[in-house]
Image (spheres, rainbow, N blue to C red):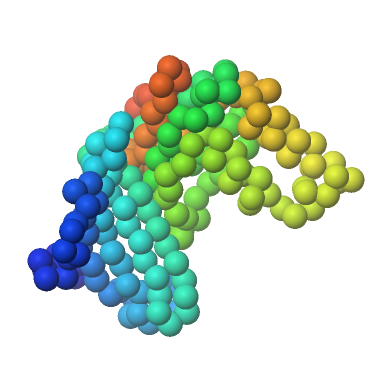
Length: 193
């Protein structure tokens, strides 16, 4: 059961934008012990409004988990970001844990696993995560898949236009960027499309 922290548990000077709203110890999905400490924070984030930040760490096996998302849950949605100029790479991205990332022009599709984290980053940061999680053989310049890494790096430098697509069944992801073209639509069941 999640409980709200008492006033005495809070720091003397609390950040007005960030406050812990609940904490608990739960069963760890990895080791199965009731040793995972979960904390939930509410953050008033510029441009997005209220955002929920969740983090957990198992004191037994060390497993870590995090998620982030808009406080206001909407219908499942698809967010399409047209990245046409270097400035668009600076658009802020809130990617909730269950969201799928697709970048058709770069051949990228990232499907979340059961312990996938949510995160806050930029469009450029999403591309960096793709490189960071690429198979190690793709970093070898003699391997044919290295060409894909080179194209992603060129996109990170603003040299390749692309569309970042976030498909979020929870409706808690969002993208905001000054002058960046962001299109949102209801995400329908893929079997209907």
